Image 1 (cartoon, helix red, strand yellow):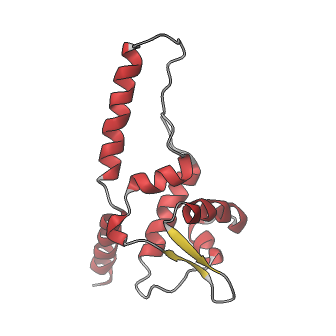
Image 2 (cartoon, helix red, strand yellow):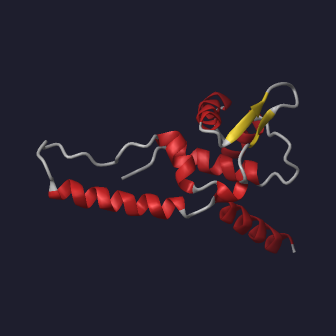
Image 3 (tube, helix red, strand yellow):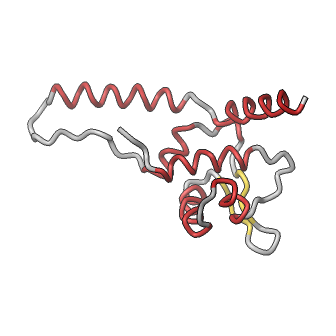
Length: 137
């Protein structure tokens, strides 16, 4: 099981945006440079994050992206769903009722979703800031 690179970039982008203490929008160029990505590629990811309501876009010269929800409410699962969608990872290829294998796989997915729903990006932001403060001290 593997998430797409877009999910990886989306998670890192969200943390970077959340670390902006002044709340000013961050431009796509800065966000792309941070991850050594094409601005065009990152724009597609940012569009999905915007459509899911996690960030908002401000047009113009001083425009960019900023968080649109309370930071303490944004989970890993929120970001993953905005990029990957909300489909099941496993689907039984043999169509029969009450597939025991599918039941096990669905339960495992539910456990994983529950875990990711309870992991908040703000916790990563705090750890990153503490790590940076330790390095700078």
